[in-house]
Length: 321
Image (tube, rainbow, N blue to C red; front, side, top):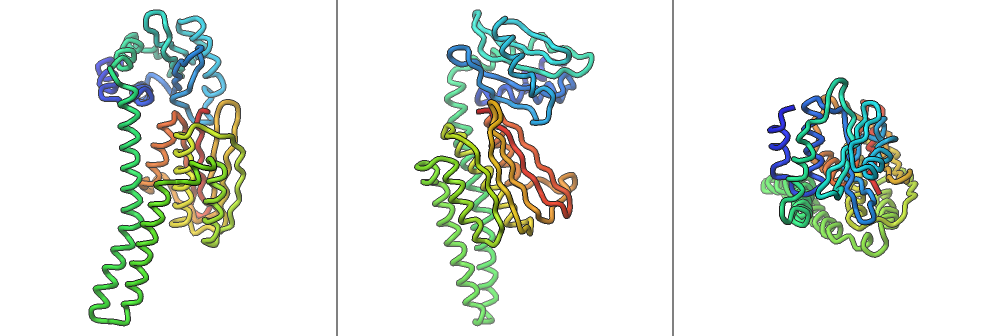
């Protein structure tokens, strides 16, 4: 692999997670690896997963064990096509990458050094967290305004133009404006999310699903989870919220189920509906779908969408605890 391409991929990364996300993407694009995961080494030599592979990937079952072995030895550990590579500085291991190599390929010799250079940039972690959080919130509010308030106000404007010649349409215009106002109020409530702050993710989702069911959908919920760090609770709430919004807007479903459960050191989620479905291969990804992927990936998690015409849609994700 051309190491210049790898170095270029790491330039401008705004945080630890983005550094490893870019490195894994570059290695996969170059045909060096099938997939990979990344761990940060915390106090007491504890491993915190930053990038996770797909939930069904064979690497998942061995990844953490290999990372722990590489951390203990402070050297690369190989098991078949799986390789755990520590990133060290002055005898201290900062992170471990676990890679599933393509047949006949080897890890670029310069990979640990390039990762170390990227990680040592001054103020990287703090600046990265702030920039990512700010940009993500801007994108989310922009999506909400465009898809919700914007479309309602456009409809109101068109109705008002008709009402200039047909005054009997004025009540419909008032209705559209009232809907836009309610959407602004809803967005304001969601930006604050007092329930999530006060009660935690499980209770906040239960309250949200209670309101959601008033739209005429049969809602089933299985939420088996403990309290999580606030940034994860916010991200997971937003992902479930966006998935349910898509069901309401597009699926023409009668039933929807929401599941959250823990397996080992990961939390998994599934939002499933019995709606009309679609073909992901020919349907361009929506802004909302891309937003869900971004949120899950920012937590080092995996995201999958499955759908077929006439067979409903499933949104599945997994994040490290």
